[in-house]
Amino acid sequence: MGRALITGGAGFLGSHLCDLFLARGHEVICMDNFITGSPENIKHLFGRDGFTFIKHDVTNYIYVDGHVDYVLHFASPASPIDYLEKPIQTLKVGSLGTHKTLGLAKDKGARYLIASTSEVYGDPLIHPQKEDYWGNVNPVGPRGVYDEAKRFAEAMTMAYHRFHGVNTRIVRIFNTYGERMRINDGRVVPAFIAQALRNEPMTVFGDGSQTRSFCYVSDLIEGIYRLLMSEEVFPTNIGNPSEMTVLQFAERIKALVGSTAPIEFRPLPEDDPKIRRPDIGKARKLLDWEPRVPLDEGLKRTIDYFRRKVLD
Image (cartoon, rainbow, N blue to C red; front, side, top):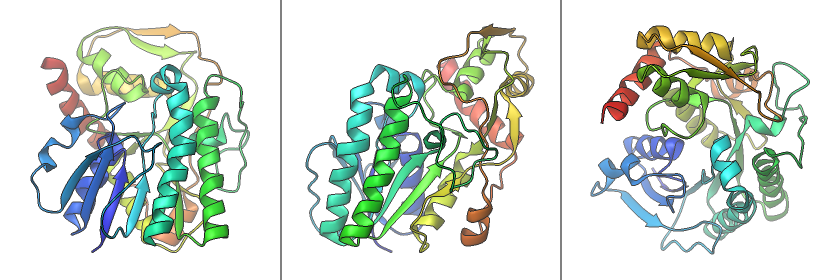
């Protein structure tokens, strides 16, 4: 079935990708330096046939012995707390890391997939967001280190495709949740669940009217795999088009947890997007893909995971 290198393979999404590739008969080389990933996410894979782990910073030269059929570049800080605390690393992994992984794909004749993000649309002026929208991004704002790193990564990927003929794919990932998210990574799902479980105030930024759409991790990973195996070169949105306000989302989690935690409002961070919902018409048509896991079902699984973590 082929040999895949997954950078950021010990992270939230990367570890689930490792699971899926192994389950479908691929060999997996997982590469991570644990800046934001965790050995805990992949400990169940050590000793398994077809799985190899390499601790490495992908902004440096990458050497992999033998053939490689697929390169999936998922290494990057991905939450506001992470990329505000690690702005230089975020820019480097989006630029140098993309350059190094594309170079490896070119050398090995491998198919390449870059994990981009809905953040390339910035604070969007159109809704929902389609792949042909160029975005509304502040390059010098605090979030710019992540937004522009991913925009550069997309440009570099297309340059390698056009100039070197590398077989590339670009996935634009919208809000995703599920097991193996870090409790303290600052994203809304782990923050709300942990606060609800502890009966601490659930912090909603602004008035909570900003919207998000949440895709369960197994749905997202399936969409990414289908995109990799497709012939689509240009960016493709993968996410859940079901939209709700952040305040509604907080109340939903509070109810599912059975918490009495109060809602606490705080000032909206700079450049925080007011709306966020993918147009997935392209993924539906080209990949025959759309989300399957209902929000409450996915949240119950995620809450069970965090309940174990919080109680530990």
